[in-house]
Image (cartoon, rainbow, N blue to C red; front, side):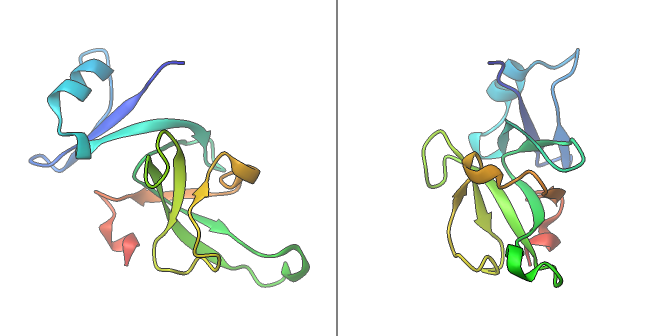
Length: 126
């Protein structure tokens, strides 16, 4: 499995992705751990790759109440709280379960949409 990352450049206020000029190894060695985000093997509803630190929204309707959509926002986390695991963390406590989901369980991200990330879209966390 190929490991891919991105990093938040604090000074330039921009997201850095691997390229022909910059490898994953260079990103990992050149940034602080807290600014490096690991790419998961999952994509959102639109096919966009999901990274640690992404903010997603998803419909959590129960099958018996599909007439009224309930959209929640969650942050993708890696290793928090479960080591070596991508999880969903509720942003505003609006996840009625109050639970951190392993995104590999029950296909939690199949219908999600990435609406930003924790660095460039802090307003989505409020």
